[in-house]
Length: 177
Image (cartoon, rainbow, N blue to C red; front, side):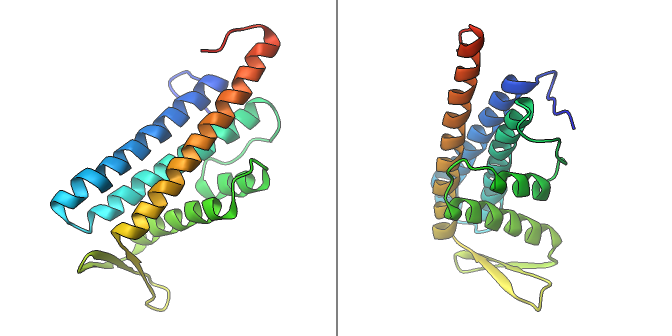
């Protein structure tokens, strides 16, 4: 699959995606640390998690597109499961906690979309899953932990991309901005 976004391809598309990821992290940070304390509506935590999921997905996709551009990996399907499977096989040095957090966030987003039962309980937002009526509690502390992990993930991804793209440009004699 050829990935393009408004005519951008290769390194420029990667940098555009990592910029989008960074923006999603900033939105999530603002919602969690500025808006949430004023409103105190635990339902907002889902919106923050969705922003973190999009940030992680965009960051992950940016690295995969770069690897595809360099012909280090084959084409891949444009869905999270396919991308995550390939991403976890590549060695970028991300720890298992980061990968687990990305997967957990994705699972929460999917559970939220599927469930017909969710409610606020004190300062928590609770999602009841269809799986034997198990549930997932989401609170400020958990989302803060997710935010810190995804922020670090996006920053590390940005550094990896910039370093690799800069090296590619240097090899061909072009200045990288």
